[in-house]
Image 1 (cartoon, rainbow, N blue to C red):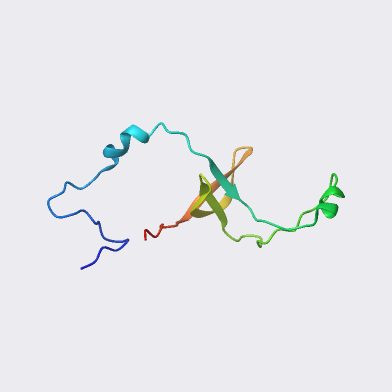
Image 2: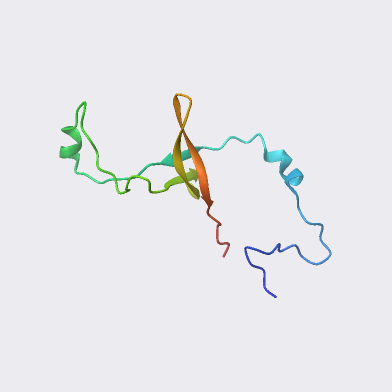
Length: 99
């Protein structure tokens, strides 16, 4: 039976890996970004923007936002309010296909 994303692919006779095996990289910093949406515009239109200008994004209200780690899409989520700051609740983890 071939390995799938839902099945562990530990080779026969090998010890399964655990989170403790990754302890050496726990302190490595990564960049995490939550992207509300995107838009395209010409430079001339960009230069005309000022206070109060509204940029229309490619997402609808309530639609999941993308969460990137080091510029790789890893999850989707919803914007939440945490005291007086914005946060993100992850609603979907994106599994990377390994080719």
